[in-house]
Image (tube, rainbow, N blue to C red):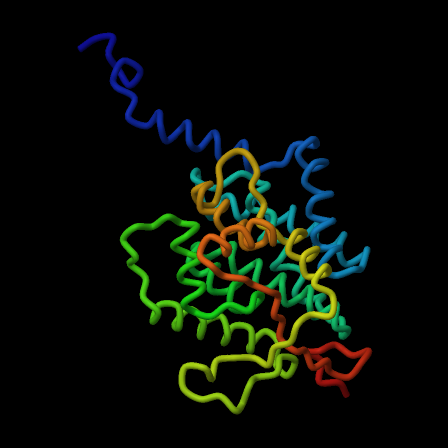
Length: 271
């Protein structure tokens, strides 16, 4: 029929073209966006590393990596700010060579914060409640039900035990020879470090505040409500309020660190 070519027929690719255009726009940072995101990336990296040059390098590399991540995730990729925090965390690790107790505290809490960015609220409950606070497995489960308001109670204590073992193994691999394992325990309790109350609970609170998952406006990695629940684990006041509703009282409990030789990279065997 005359007058009805490609232009006259239904546009079956319009949605795809629109998604592609939106994706291409997000591949590049505008000057304004770079000016907004670089300080955030730098501040986060500097808090973890306490080194100006290393923080600047991490922030620069993380921002440079954003377009590749957007391409990998496709049109459904979250906004740049939501992607930036895990990129910074990934790039700080190779510079995490300090050997003081405060260095290890920051590295340890950053590792757990990064873990929470990629896992569910249930996983985050286990990681933070059992490895930062002095709660038990059943306590972590009760906290999960309190905050999530899940009515089906689909999680069993065995789920907590499995997640605990996973986090324990990941921490032991990340900090070999640094975290004391409790060798006297057997059975389910064998997956346990030697803990102690931190010298400065205020410092732990400060670290948690600085490492809290970001919650920007726009498209997110996961539902906003899920991120808000995870953030309660990083806010001692909110955490205390939720614990009080289920008759729990939580204090900080941080593993005892065994620093390697001072002045040397913890992962460098030396000459």
